[in-house]
Image (cartoon, rainbow, N blue to C red; front, side, top):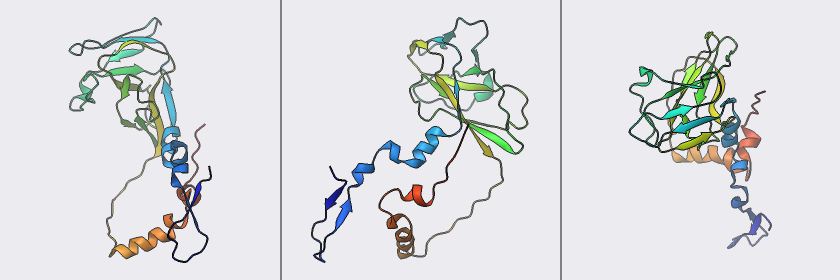
Length: 208
């Protein structure tokens, strides 16, 4: 089926077509979303673990077969940080045995992996100055209530995105009237029917 549909009620009586925007309404067409999904690096689970969080009133149990520890109970550092409603309030430390080192002036943003919502873990967001830290990073996570079973090796635990540190100061302004904004919109987003952001504003990001 053609992505174009005939225009109706054309006052000029000329041949005119408009784009059927539904042909482009998929996640693969949304560049900002794809940038989030593919930014930085995924930190995977390096061993299978068995999780028993079936008792919502008790601290979840996490066990494994490997000789090194995979998780530890987190201390009181997260006091005052509320867990999501369907996750246990007791956090765990994921023992990542890799050191993350960034160039001077660069830190990392730690988040839940954007493309993986149902891992039964929830990474606690953090910003870490990895150009100065000399220690391994123990990623804190919450455990999903009611889950009981094996979480397999390779499951993404956290997403790590490096960024350059800088000091910021916000400034605020408004358009004097709606026409000014409409003129700006017509000159930018409105002037392209498809892929405006990708063609005019997007910058390619690379992580290797």
